[in-house]
Image (cartoon, rainbow over all chains, first blue to last red; front, side, top):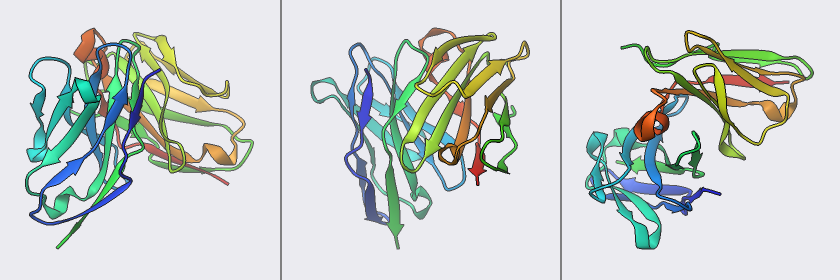
Length: 112
Length: 116
């Protein structure tokens, strides 16, 4: 069974500082990996995805993620956060069964 | 291009009632998925439909059902509501075929159900 672990429930970061959100996955075959962001009262917006190829993927809003198969990880990074990046972030894994499995999410607070 | 539209956005029901939620996918998308989001359980997969056929179903009781119409619009129904059904119900659409087509989901804003 596929699963995703996001070890950090809540992260506080200063505006302009770098951000890294951790994600570990469990999947028997080649995983398809995603990061989504959710603002309060809204649906989920796709930040980036990894299917194959280059293990460093670029996404929207200046985010990037690196796939490390040996560590079963897909960590999300941003070099310099903006106050508008305050939101909840979800890592997800998908496969050939038409569903995504999501992590519990990491809430990011940005302080001025 | 219009996004995924979910109606209603908010609704309040009482225990024992039933509810129907609607989802209109992005034009041209043939797959619709439903997810339940709660503070305690997080995001959980309910079911996925493609061309009116259910291709996968999550681990939910039979009170939760869905369907998809020939125009790809989808509805989900929850009968005999329980307090624990209070949640944000998210619909997502995708083209539905191929690796990217089946997995890259575009989500709607959700329908927030409160059961009293």
